Amino acid sequence: MIKEEIIQHINKLRKEKNAIILAHYYQEPEIQDIADFVGDSLALAQWAAKTTADIIVLCGVHFMGETAKILSPLKRVFVPDLAAGCSLADSCPADQFEEFINAHPDHTVISYVNTTAAVKALTDIVVTSTNARQVVESLPENEKIIFGPDKNLGDYINKLTGREMLLWDGVCHVHAQFSLDRIIALMKEYPDALMLAHPECPKYLLEIADHVGSTSSILKFATTSEKKQFIVATEAGILHQMQKENPDKLFIPAPPEDATCACNECFYMKMNTLEKLYLCLKNERPEILVDEETRVKAVKPIERMLEISARYGL
Ligand code: 13P
Ligand code: SF4
Image (spheres, helix red, strand yellow):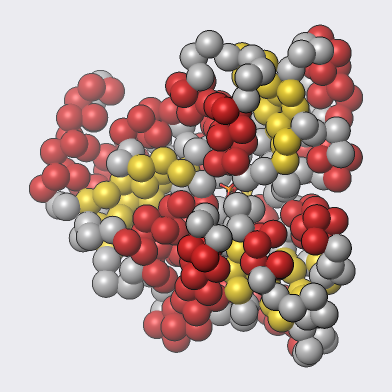
């Protein structure tokens, strides 16, 4: 089937089935373009919580589909490819995280949204990179905190807030493999360009960045800036919206260590294709299911995150 036919079928099915298509900024451009809504991890959770659709097709990775299902248990949630996982979520198995928590019983547990439902069920408050600072600052200054699984984000929030949260030793394989040398070479080649970095990047990159923020924050910064050139240190999918909203500006993807690649992509995010999205709507699978016992425990820390975010207007 040619692309135009697939798009026609998707449009017909989404209407017939009262389905909403939510896509993360790291998805392929053609998926972003057909989605009802494109956003960061927090915005996708907020949409999943408020939609009146019967079906949510979450074009992102598994934990995003799980978060949608946990928030909207009466809706059916599908992801185009069930194998679309996350190296960060994988770096934090629930049994090992539970041992870590048990070893520090007097600590409040904060988990990044990039975790499994089982890890969220062990958590007091979930965060995304958009609201991590505000969530941490909403807690008393002397509160002891465990933060997992992204050590780079945790370290960055410690620096911003002056806290000393205990950090789980996890990283995202995409953000951990940007090349400092190649980025510095780009900065010399484009001396007027600003460097924008996601807080999942290592400290040595955050220290040379002109702006550090979540995907939505990076997009907003570039759109409102008077500057015309930007080196972007996050997954390259975000460049699609950046370019769409700012056709007169130049966005340069920050390169990984691998000298044969010009940009850094998450192969999990890129597992979803337009054709898989069509098949998913047509066949109503693969479906995300979360057992009710886990869901009831996991929904509380996600709702706490949504409440705190609303308080801060996020
Ligand atoms: P945000 O969309 O919250 O910035 O997170 C980036 C990410 O790594 C999603 O997997
Ligand atoms: Fe996970 Fe990193 Fe891919 Fe985001 S970019 S889904 S954190 S592996």
